[in-house]
Image 1 (cartoon, rainbow, N blue to C red):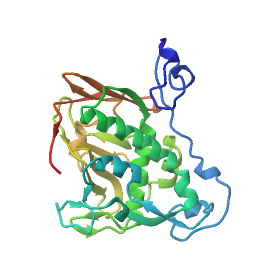
Image 2 (image 1 turned 180 degrees about the vertical axis):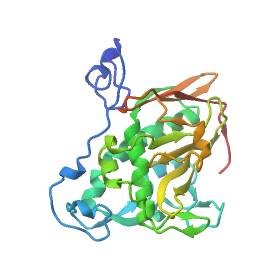
Image 3 (image 1 turned 60 degrees about the vertical axis):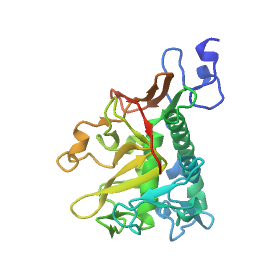
Image 4 (image 1 turned 30 degrees about the vertical axis):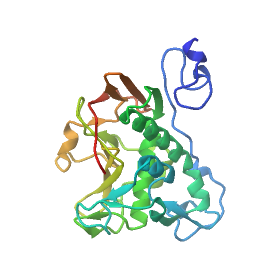
Length: 295
């Protein structure tokens, strides 16, 4: 079957030629959220998007991490977390997914952001399958949507006072030049150098586990400027402004917005192409010899 007639790698169930394949190359466009064009309605006090003036419905119990992704990470085992202010430094605790909710979005805005949840779920589903030595696959995701999902996650953690540094709860304030709502709505609103970094190196051994570990990055005023996260044992850093490499030297050798992540085994390879619309060249990241560990 011709490549263009096959199901698209993005999982849309459309043919590739009518979706992400133009006959020569693959590209997954970021989803259009249209937050600024939502019809005006009202404001809900606890909703962190209330400045848009388009709140509707009661405040919703927003999961701090997308519920479907927590269930995916949990698998047949348990979901554990570390790095929140109500845990001791270095402590990891197993929790039911229903325990990790916060009242920080109205129903309308929670729904408006849900496409980001769907794209992140697909990314981590394919990644987990590769780490679990599942069937080899070749998929494609929008990197901008994964970035914005991480921004959505850190915003929910900040709004619910679930971020800490040195065991001290942070007030949840972002640096003044970080336009969170604009960056959620429009991938082109991200400053040059802000975005997703992968500090892992090609060939590095990863630890395959279901923990979600988080650590905020703050400036000298204690304002949030980014987030370090370990998901499925893989390290990611999201910077919301161009990083000061003297402050985060691990990013000196990190891949900025990798164009592909591959998980290689003797029996085959799982590939995830990551699309970007920033006009840059994006290097791939290859992981090998992933070992499973007890949680």
